[in-house]
Amino acid sequence: MGNQKDPVSSHGLLWFGASVSIAEILTGTFISPLGFSKGMAAVITGHLIGGVLIYLAGLLGARSGRGAMDTAKLSFGEKGAALFSILNVLQLIGWTAIMIASGASAANLAANGAGGYSLWSLAIGVLILAWLVMGMKNLGKVNIVIVGALFLMTVAISLAVFKGDPGSAAGGTMSFGAAVELSAAMPLSWLPLVADYTKGAGRKKAVSLVSAFAYTAGSIWMYAIGLGAAVFLGESDIAVIMAGAGFGVLGIYVVIASTVTTTFLDVFSAGESFTSISQWPGRKAVAIAACILGTILALRVDVFRFEGFLYLIGSVFAPMAAIMLTDHYILGKDSSGESFNFLNLALWAAGFMVYRLFMSMDTILGSTLPVMGLISLATIMMNGGIQYVKNASGKEQA
Image (cartoon, rainbow, N blue to C red; front, side):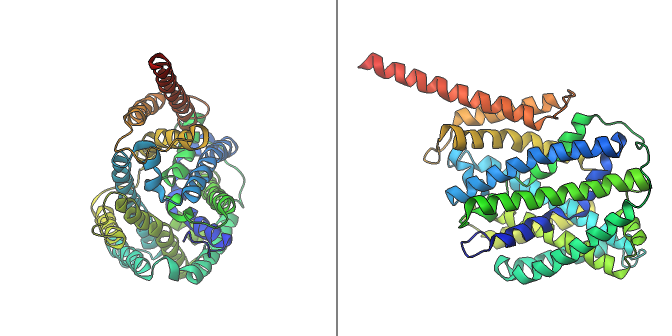
């Protein structure tokens, strides 16, 4: 994916398929304390923030011809970017575990316990490995069939969820800002991946825009299903929802397909990210290792309440993205020739702490947008100050 022969539509199919996942639906159920109308306003607001960021990150990769973690070198230096490559590989292994666990749980329930959770987890892990063996170039036609099936499933589940009357807000508490942040955090988790699929695109803006739109629209839909199921039906179990939509054995296949297509992107990009640090042992070997580790985590660790994981992703990658996008689109800087850009690394560390601080506040736009705005402004001011000092020093010497 990402070469000039790829049609723009293939990128749309890829990213819509990535958005259709059990994890996205489950995250939508977390927002149910707000009720449906207010919850959807938060979902759309958060996804618009995240969608714009995906577009800008994708366009950066398309323009530079670099993969996601290689674009980090433009702001943090050749060795400084290694920190983000490592953090990205770790978050991708975490996502692999979450996706496999949620898919296996839904498939197990849909099968009335036949096989058991562990067997379904292993089966999904093996299928992801099979996807890796096939490789990106051989998945085009397969992806069309799978995304078509996922689309029909999503329509059927939507009809089952929204046929009732809106209920009141579910139990528990959640502020509007927290819901916005929970909505922005999911697209933000794809931010360190998107350039892996837009690099080398022939129609740079079109590919970046279609990728961002397809994922954002699909993710909003998934959140809406989860939110609607919790509010309209009082139900957050996707397997129960699918049973109500009339899915039987077919539902199991669709759940597994959605899990495999989404998680494949995670493990594939884990390999891409690691190669920005070292070419050994190679992309595919790292991707296979990430898949195996994610499967083991799904079998051994409780990963079903992952709100904290989403917020951690936001605190790491929101300030990183703010610096990278500011450097590229505003300052026009390229630090890839340096080993470390210590100023930007210090700004990122400050952004991480500011994000964690903002989590204790209740802002209407959550944490991502305010923190990115502050770090972007700080990046402009600090770089401007350094340039001013350099210019003043040059005048004195003259």
